[in-house]
Image (cartoon, rainbow, N blue to C red):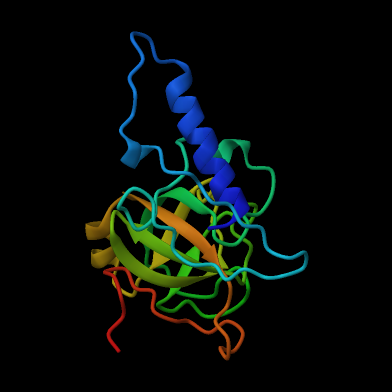
Length: 187
């Protein structure tokens, strides 16, 4: 776990206990285990991976988090998103043909040409290429491209979590990987 993730957990835990009223309780020894924090050497890269928190695969940040965000996300930061789907034909913002595995996102949060992993609850929907934008795509909205407009309407709006991840080793630039509207693409 990165130092930033440990600090975030510490802040969340502190914020949850600050406003408590009433008699204080002693926690059982199993809940007061020490936290081990290790820092990486300067310049070392830490691979991004899903974070395990409280039994969930990924837990998103607090509601309204994206409002305070000033620039692009860092790799591995879980972000709460609203997921929609679209079926327009033509080219994307980066002048490439639309295809499965791409999403439209706000380039202020999700830089164009980067990859995001999308989760809805515990269901992993796959890794998508951020390749498009839209007039109504702002803050924490991800718009997943699909071939069928009917499928896009059935998908509706859902809440999920997105994690910015690096391009896999050996993958060519703009390679579309596993992302699909209904979940993982068949292999």
